[in-house]
Amino acid sequence: MTSEPSETRAGDRAGGSAPAGAGGRVGVAEALRETWLELWYQPKIDLRKKCLAGAEALARIRHPELGVLLPGRFLPGIDEDSLLDLAEYALVSALADWSTFRAAGFNLRLAVNIPVHVLGRLPIAELVAAHRPESPDWPGLMVEVTEDQIVRDIKRAQVIANALRDSGISVSIDDFGAGYSSFSSLRELAFAELKLNHSFVKDCATDATNAAICQTAIDLAHRFGSVAVAEGIESLADLQALQIMGCDFGQGVLLAPPMPKDRFLGLLQQRTAKPKPAAEPAVLADAASA
Image (spheres, rainbow, N blue to C red):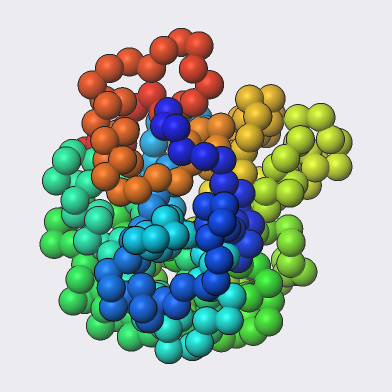
């Protein structure tokens, strides 16, 4: 386990903050130009096998004066061109990072967050063709889109999902439960995983309503031939409850927080080199390998 501070999913969506005392917003265009932008990775854990199954890429700006900035300091008010540039950076960097992890012996499925309307404007096929790993072991990439984005235009989302699939990219429905999607709209969209909104995951071990929502979402994912992912797991009790419910994968600060690429790679190598202490709550016991 690392010493990274706790971070919420909301912080990675829009509301995160920089270190105390930092002021103002940093532009993505400037960050790209100055090479301040980087991807951090939050492990995704297989809750059945209790091993690492993949990781979600999260954008950070490492500012020379303000330190590491979360998306809440550079996403609000971002212009469309910068958002496109950021999405392309995340996609291309994740493809390159997979090769780095594979060279170290780990075959992980990585995920990136890209809004639906941005996916519709990106030359996905060309980008993947130019930057996809040459290894035959590449498991493909996952793109996470929020439920509310899909609901706005299910037909467009369906067209985009089909185009992504042709390029080896699968769709993950993020923040499920926070939107208003229907069974019919989900049926029309080919998705690989359903991510339970963290507000329902929290206290699912003791809150009957949250537990019922989590169980329903897990069962729904399985009935559609997909997998269920619980995000924002913060307590051992919630983790154990989700395992009993049959949840496939999990993310959260209890398991491992987001971390820089080099630290993530170091953690994988460390976990394969020595066994996990029996008393440690994290389940990063073994790294996924070929």
